[in-house]
Length: 272
Image (cartoon, rainbow, N blue to C red):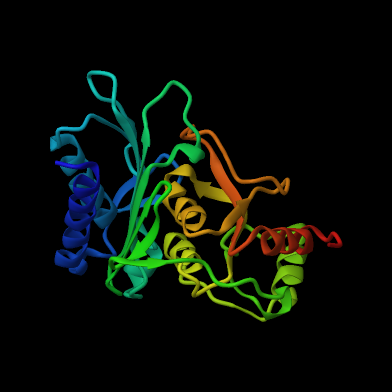
């Protein structure tokens, strides 16, 4: 079985589990995951389906997942799979049909970074969008090639901006500056889906500077890079990070480097 087929099967199994158990979408397990979030029953069920498919394949995967954390194999793995079984859990709990499943795989090495992502799949459970990024080969949406939007003036840009965090004066000021500088905002509350929409040109950028997004969301930034976009960190450098389980992602992902840096400059209160 090929790597891509294995990942497709894993995502499909998770999606089926979600759709067949929607009556339990608000049920909690009573546990808290490694990232401090209360665990939904469907998160665990979807994650178990993904893990089962990966572990039953003829490829040796180590797995970093949202609910179970790091799962090693008995022998040296061939790949590390970064798994977000349900991105948009709060949407799912409330019946809002904006929920995604995401997986990225990286060749297993002693030192691995986000630049090593080889294949990523993100499936939008209720809108029937499946995005696939393959290193060096671009991104497809439902089998058709997509790319980021054409360059646009900052004042005309439509972006996703994540505000879910404990507010303080600095973050409020940065957020207001950023939102005022662009034409408008859109947010699905599934960051993986917003990153896919940035990769496919529906949005011009996606901003997450909260220091709250775990590295399991790597598949989203991988989509933007492979679709021809650019992702920068808070220092204004090309986004690249280790795959340590404790890493939180902070970035501006945009259709091009100039727009990403303009958004970051506005966020930080600097001129550009």
